[in-house]
Length: 89
Image (cartoon, rainbow, N blue to C red; front, side, top):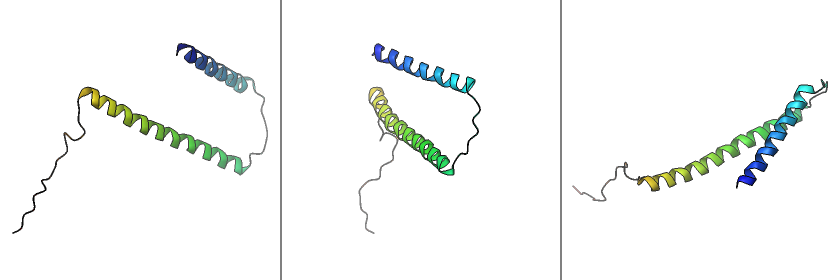
């Protein structure tokens, strides 16, 4: 586990360092940005946001369920229930 974490940290830090150098020492580029490129970027960003929301929702529910089980809390403890009695006047 520690080895995988170290490899991931090394990869992310080198990508960050490389990206920083590209931004810091990069030359100015004068180019036309096609509108289709912007729509692709919007689709990519919205896909990332939606997938991160789904991941947080799934794992948040799992963590909530695990914590409720460990702490002895019940989901139905605060719910009001009605009786099934039928009254005919």
